[in-house]
Length: 71
Image (tube, rainbow, N blue to C red; front, top):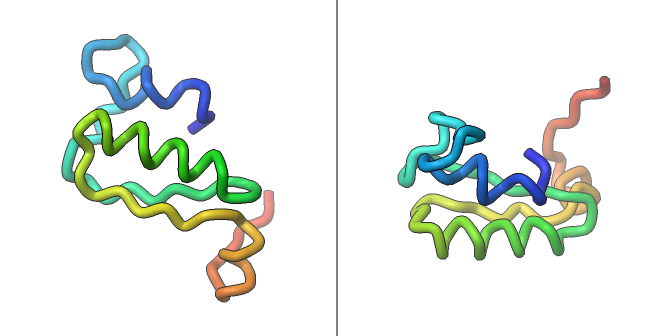
């Protein structure tokens, strides 16, 4: 999800809420360099989400052998 929409998608009080995002659902965050994932993790934690993992940047994910799908 785009970082700019996170607060809306993660908030059940908004019309943009994604019901897959329950407070205890596992959520894995990744972005281009890691900074936005870190900010998203703090935001979700502040919103009461309890199972948030910040993977960091995509290059670190690739270097660690994480799976990648091409579009």
